[in-house]
Image 1: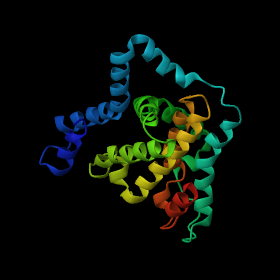
Image 2 (image 1 turned 45 degrees about the vertical axis):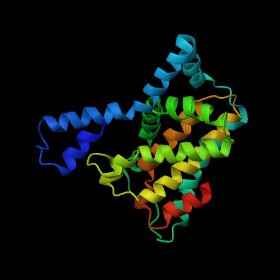
Image 3 (image 1 turned 30 degrees about the vertical axis):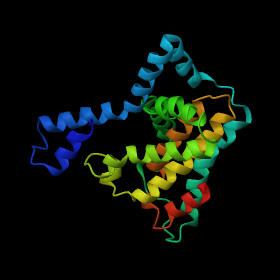
Length: 229
């Protein structure tokens, strides 16, 4: 519903520079925090303020031990390998962040903070509930599919990177489902910490800015998904 104004702006007859544009921009940000807001509301309803504090506290469980290695390395390494192995021979795309690598940590921190809008919902609430009813793999696949479908409006509405860059939806879905399995693996081995989910999700977003898969050649994204599988 929050993203509906963006659809109207894309396919309707509204003035792209008028009030509809501002409504669309506001809606994009409000929609982006929907999963976490719903999760916090549900936890507050069932467990009150102590439950909300426990949820928020899971983000600052920093003792991940050796798990920092896969959390920090798997996704970026696969993206780099995919670009190097791309059958197109195009090499690395010429992006602004590659030309100004000192900005990469800053952009990563921005994406890390932005996960407040989603990850309390996907991994803070839904994952635990689903794992009470099914296996870790089953829960990961369900969340991955829902996570991908939740992004669907971004592929058909102007102003979202998915639409404006004509990203392949099928490849995107497979990436989110496999990354969802990875995040569950991290979380279940770090005493339920949400920090791996925040980091991994931020790295996926960062990779799309530093080494965008859609600009690396037709096979690049396929290589990444193959490695993730």
